[in-house]
Amino acid sequence: MRNFRLLVLSALLILSSCSQPVRAPEEVRVRLAMEPETLSPVSYSDAGALQILNLLFQSLLSADLADNKIKPFLAAAMPQIERLDSVTLFTYQIREEATWPNGAPVTAEDVAFTLKVLKAPLLNNEFLKPQVQFIQDIRMDPSDSRRFTFVCAGYSPEMELLTGDFFILPAYLFDPEALLQPLEVAALTGSLSELENNPGLKAFASRFNSPEYGHSPGMLQGSAGYLLEKWETGKYLTLKRKSDWWGSRLTHAPHLTANPERISFQIIPDNTTALLALKNRQLDVLENIEATEFDRLRQDKDFLEDYALYAPNAYEFIYAGINARLPKFSDRRTRQAIAHLLDVKSIIQVSQQNYATPTVGPVPPTVEEYYNQSLKPYSFNPKRASELLKAAGWEKEQDGWFRNINGKRKQLTVEVNYRAGSNNYEKAAIVFQRGAAAAGIPVQVQAVESSLLSQKLRTHEYEVFFRSLSGNPFVLNFQPLFHTSYAGQGGMNVTGFGTPESDSVLHAINQADTPTEKANLLKRLQEILYEEAAFLSLYYLKDRLAVHRRFGNVKVSGLKPNYDVSAFTLKK
Image 1 (cartoon, rainbow, N blue to C red):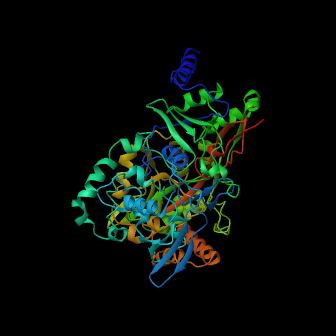
Image 2 (image 1 turned 60 degrees about the horizontal axis):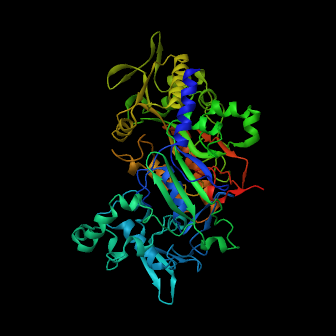
Image 3 (image 1 turned 90 degrees about the vertical axis):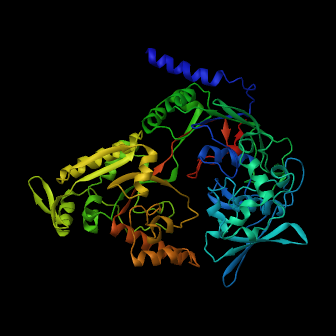
């Protein structure tokens, strides 16, 4: 009882010692699991920072969590697309109502400035630079300062989203001396070494890379509906609604919202403390609730009087990777045998309390038009695993399975790595260990610190691992994960998966002209992945979310952060 009381006191101290403004009726208090290193709209590095930035800045296009569809935000409409021989033109019109906090209009010059920031050398833009490499130039409309055209290399369906999926920065605020104005966007493609000595760029970089550009309320001012009111390090961040935001006057764009008067992000790294704060009614929103605790909350009648619980299908999946480069795993029948020893149903039950959906591949089962319904997830089947091992040349002896590899008698053993500190991965590894034991295969389970695990994967010094990947239903470009050109050391294709056919299919997916053609190609890719069994997609997660019942218009979604706090309305 003493420990419980101390934990309660800890939660109360965290939320009561912050000297925050008096809580307004429309204020929403949200838990932030990790304090952002920066709120720079170019070099942010975590999901919490992205959630806050979406309330301060806007991109041309974004997702409406009400229906998970891409819609124009800062843009007045979806872009006009013109495909030419080697380039594609995407023409945008910025909303005529859109203004910056100083009242100035958002123009094409701001878009050009943003592209320069994303593409230029010397700047902290490594995170987003690859996303805009295909944009070669921007053409201004001389008759309309809000109209412009991106000139893009080649074509892929994802380009429509990618041309609009970065925050537009106010040039007047970020570059008051117009240091980047002499640079041309077209000059920021290819080798940029000559620009590293550009005096204007060097002067701009020294400022832009400073902490002020990612922490100062005076700098973090965009075209969205909120301003950063206060950032109390280690305690909270508060955002305040703009008094006369331009988006609130639009009746034809209901997805543009800034309803709550104030949004307060409480920095609470510890999950137990965050849950206690929720139970004490000091948080209005808590996501990623541990599964067993979520089940307990579902049985708590007093809690349910004040809070609604949601479990949306997320776009994050857990997978197992097998190093197909190793001689003992080179035969796909061996890898298929391992797949039959992964008891996915038990893994979901013990690690997620069934808040997950089995999958046959990396395409979310909720994206029904692209998911391969004809495939069935690998079942736990030690007998079938034994048959596959025999077909792959392994012989069952009293001590296990053996085969001659490079002239030497080798036993089939497996070492499984997962990120240290993750109970869910640990449980999955133990379930696999027990399943493999049923077929006579010894499995060693090894927790590895996160950065070391990443290094082991990049250098291919592993056997089997568990990990997760997050995505969305809009961009299904799997080339970096599965194309053989990315299978070298340091590449994202860490399993070594790939065949001539899969490479061809991956390329064709990005060139598909129609949804039907793309669907057929994606389904074939899932078949190849299933057959090769080097990248084993196990299950898609369900998020677990609690929201105070005094708020409506929550827009629960599988897209992170699984709700749209800017849309919350206060129930009468």
